[in-house]
Length: 231
Ligand SMILES: C[S@@+](CC[C@H](N)C(=O)[O-])C[C@H]1O[C@@H](n2cnc3c(N)ncnc32)[C@H](O)[C@@H]1O
Image (tube, rainbow, N blue to C red):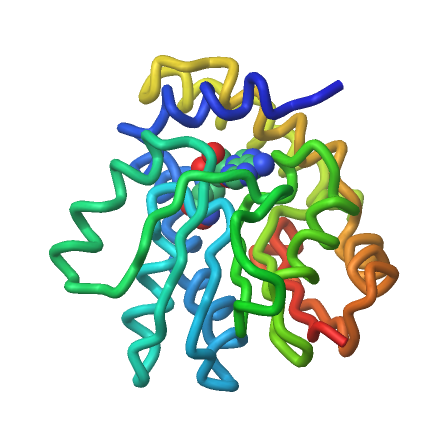
């Protein structure tokens, strides 16, 4: 079943409280994960960076602040409200970030026009992962870098029980209280349960034609950063 018809309005609805909830749910750790992900993408000093599923532009801003060479950043998301909530911070930072409303599975960008793609917490929300890898491979130039920051299902027995409690009880309760949108924060744990493991995701990315695929886990294994090169 297609997720996008309800995922998009859901993110539009939670946009005003999204940043606050992100910080609370990750206990502030998401900042460090974003910094690490962006550092991988900046290694080759990419001139053009695509932030796919940019939301309220946290990753775009991190890329701008962490780079010493003023890259051009294209921040793409299909939820206009998410982008709109991030834009004031971009303006205050004077960052070269162009917000584009569009679909990550049908990127409105020329083939080979991007030097690096960064993406945080997007894949769980997509209708099709294989289509996403194809879409990313098309717009990345050969040798360009793909970096994905995403949750990973925790399989270790002890942590698994702990995370189930945290994800399935605490997060929906907190999300409902703060955003007033219970469904969005029930969707979050469900989408993690159904998501491939970090190794499975690496295998998918490799099967889609990327090379040098690597990943590292963070947050007791609840989060993974994957990075790879377009062949
Ligand atoms: C969990 S949020 C992550 C936002 C941001 N990257 C961050 O790290 O905070 C997922 C974002 O992906 C966007 N999204 C989901 N499916 C998409 C698609 N097919 N095309 C573009 N954006 C999409 C949603 O609108 C939402 O803003």
